[in-house]
Image 1 (cartoon, one colour):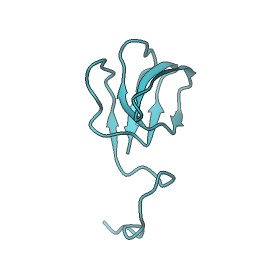
Image 2 (cartoon, rainbow, N blue to C red; image 1 turned 180 degrees about the vertical axis):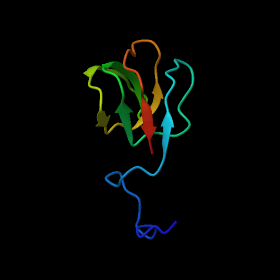
Image 3 (tube, rainbow, N blue to C red; image 1 turned 90 degrees about the vertical axis):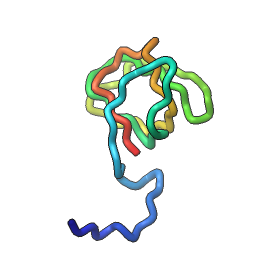
Image 4 (cartoon, helix red, strand yellow; image 1 turned 45 degrees about the horizontal axis):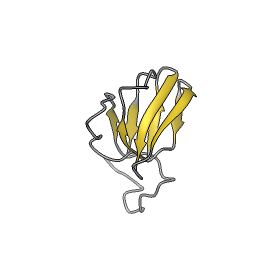
Length: 87
């Protein structure tokens, strides 16, 4: 398939090139650090940021992409569902 943008550099403001479903886990990092997280069902999102800081985002809304650089999504504290990692 032709990609008119293949010669462009990917930046944090570029559209995502890859996506993976997220299964929250307290002990396992994601396959790759995210550029954003899509939330399919509202709730709380507890994550370990790329910096190592753990933070809870309360009441994240369904249908929203949050621009977060996340290494791990924790099962403890996460009630949001249908999470997709965007890279």
